[in-house]
Each structure stands twice: as structure tokens, then as C-alpha cells.
Image (cartoon, rainbow, N blue to C red):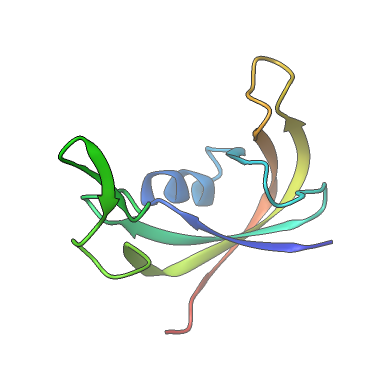
Length: 114
């Protein structure tokens, strides 16, 4: 069992914590497995680069100068939830690099240490 610490934008974070969202769609780049834990850190991305660190300028991508890394701000709370099911890309019309993670019903929310 692994623990995956991930940024989670407020809109998604809030509905996961409430229990209304029972899945998470992610890049399949971390060898997710059933029973792994997701630690979702509530993160407000930079308005200019949406947390990527890159923006369009003069027709090309360039480094975002609007904020310091991590190109947004952590909001001081996080949620821990267990992966109960995984649908990997390449099936059901999902791109091969994407997976859908089913989330358990128990969600532990706690403040982060600054």
C-alpha cells in the first residue's frame, strides 16, 4: 500500500470531502493500486497558469511570472481517502494515460502543518 500526496483544486476537493464525488480522474503516472491512500491537499492554482507554471505568450508557451512555485497556494487542509477501484485508460474511451480512481466512503480531513 502506497500513499500518494496530490494537489486538489478547491472545486474538486470540496465535493470529494462532502462525499458527493466518489471518484478522481488522474494521469496514470504513479502506479496507483487498490487500497493505496490518496492524500488530497486543497490547492488554489495561480490564475494565470492554472498551476502548470506555463502560460501562452506571443504564440508560444513561456514560464509563468505571476506567482512563485508551486504556482498557487496550499489552503491548509487535506483529505485522506482509500482507492477502492481503478479503471485504467485504453478502455471505455479513456486515453491510455488516464485512470479513474474509485474512492472509499471514509474521508479523513485534517489541517496541514505550515
